[in-house]
Image (tube, rainbow, N blue to C red; front, side, top):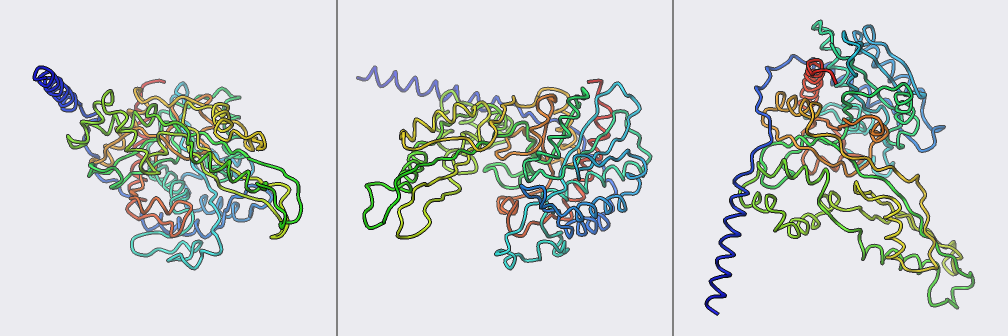
Length: 490
């Protein structure tokens, strides 16, 4: 027995030595660069432009006929008036209805262009919540160091700071070596079926392969990652797929006084309960794994120990991530029952009941695989299962080892010296996915400094952007345009 105990102790000591050595041996993946001196930014004028843009209700709807085209036309005019150098020096084209496409020709036409994208539309505001806003959602009021209103973050603040960066560079006499293209879609909040989808199809048909595409996406996270005090610049290198399934059951109608053992509502409700009891399998790989590989060297030793030794602690790491909805979404295809319908009268048996279940697909999970798992979990021939959305394509993550990602990281570190820059998975969906068929360097990042409470403002109450964020974003985009002109041919 003593020999066995000594052997176990020896094994434990060896494991401890190996795991600690591996944790201590992790090298930081952050580029060491000199911070840039401050760049003058006309902050008051930018904030005023954003305020006026928020007041224009460019709300996106699933039905294009509901668009307030006058609001989009007014926004186009506002941007033309407020950025006169952009309007004069760049070629501007209205495409796909109400989207804007700008071209800033570079001096070397052999270089693939850099493409900066965003969107002009916003989500609606629920009329029942209007009174809960601290400032009216479409007033664009400036207060307490913020511009408030729908679109401040998503995504009029992004559009205006990109244009502000170009305006600033033009004022300084900068001429890009690599062409700079800007595209601002009209319907990102309605899946981008007209705007980005149409524009991407045009680029693909013309054989254009952007060197780097930077869209909206993930923020500069403040205090979101335990153990990391510095802001984390999360650069989207992949996003989850999108699938909605309709579950339906039919039954004989009749009077509620003589119900069967299960009504159509009960059948579908049981199917939903089975789905929630059997979530899709979890795994830590791809973009999420790359994010933690970049984060791990910056963590305290205790946390670093687990991430540096996933060969041993992998199940514990995964279990910890599954404890919180925000981190669980990074490691599994999520299941969300969102709509339930059935019955027309309280004393009448329903002849049909339906439910919609929304899935956000982890990269690597195909729609077909998810549907098959749903069928096995429901295991009820009375329930029909059909997709209501087109089956999405799965694309590999964008590169993190090449010059494009390095340029983004270097730029972020120059403008935000204390930032920890990491590749990351966008757990939602954006219209950037339309470009992934023909562009290997599709990224998403807006350097808004946001904490966990700020993240709830996306599509929610009291959306706002700090004036300091507007200044930082102009500096970031201006520097990125300069940096991409210095990158070798590619």
